[in-house]
Image (cartoon, rainbow, N blue to C red; front, side, top):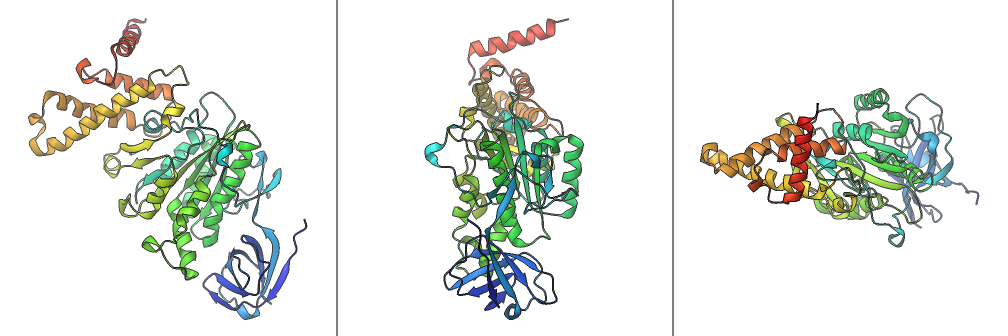
Length: 465
C-alpha cells in the first residue's frame, strides 16, 4: 500500500521540541513528519502521540526560530523504518541509521519497522548454549547464554563503556558459528564516538559489527530510536540471516532520562522519581526482543548497560530492568578503586540461565561445581575481610585466613584481567589453579573424583618435558 501524505497548516501550540496538532484523526504513532517554514530549511519530526483530536510531534532538529502558527506540517504516512541487511556489517551509523563513517547511505536488503515486537512466547525456544564474552567474571561465574538478556549495573564514574567496548571487540560464539555484534551507544560524547570508532577499527571487530552511535548533542527522540534501529538490524541478522547476534546497549539510563524528558514536556502524570508510569512497558518492549525462535538457526542476545544514579540498585531504572531481564552483572566501586578491571562484583551478580548454557562443551567439565566452589570460598573470604577490619587478621581462624587469601587471589588473578581476552578454557584453568591452593577440607563443593582428576592433570603438566 502506497503511503499517503497529509499536510496541516499551523500547530495549535509548541512546548520545547514538541508541536501539538489538532484534528489529526489519521495520524499514526511513529509516523515521519516534515516541517516547512518559508525561508528556513525543512525540519524532520516524528509523531510520538497519535490521537483523533490532538497529536504530538517531536521535532528532531533545532526549534529556534520555528513559529508554530506559520509552519506547514506534512505527515508522510510512513512510520520509522530501518535499512537492514548483512551489508551493514562493518558500518558506523548514527542513532537513526545515517552514516558516521564517511561512506554512502547503506542500501540494505530490505526495510524493517524499528518499533518491532516482542517474540511470541509460543515460538520461543529455551536458551541452551552460551556466548563467550572474553571476560572471566562473566564467562566463568555468570555465563551469558544465547537468547538471554543480561544487564550490567554500573555506577557514575565506573568503566561501563570500557567494558562494553571490550565485550564488543572480544565476544564470539565458542564453537565457530556465524556471529555478529550490534552495538548501540546512547547519549555518548563526540570524543567517545571517535574513540569507539578508532578502537573497533584497530581490533578488527568492526568487520563483524554494526555500530549505532547516538551522541548527547543529538535530539532527545533519537535516544529513543537508536536502540530500536539497532534491534531491527539485529533481528534481521539473527532470524533471517541465521547469525548468532549479541546486542550491547549503553547507556540505558540515558534512554530512560530521554523518556522522562519527553513525558515531562507532554505534562504527563509522573510515576516514581518523575519517570513515566509506562517505563516498565517501554523497557520490556526492548528487552523482550531477545531470544531464540523455533525453526530459526540464529539467536539474539542482549547486554544492556545502565548507570545506577547514586549507586542505588533500588532506583527505578535498575529495579524495573531487573524484573524484566534474567540476572545482572554488578560493577564494584571498591574493586575499581583498587585497580581491578573489569571491576565485576561476582557475589551480587547473577545469570539465571547459566545452568542452561554450561556443560554442553566437553572441554570444560564440572563447570557448575567449579563455579559453586569459587563462589563459596570467595564469599567466605569476603566475610573474613570484614571481620579482619574489626579483630585484625591475626584474630581470624586458620580457615578464615585461608579464605581471605583466596579472595585476594580471585580478585587479582581471576576477576582482574586488564585488556587481555580470555577464552573460557583459560578462565577455568586459572580458577582450578587457585582452588588447588586450598586444602581438601576447604573444598566442600567438590567431590574426591573431580579433585583427583584435576590434581592428576597438574602433576602430568609439571612432569611433562
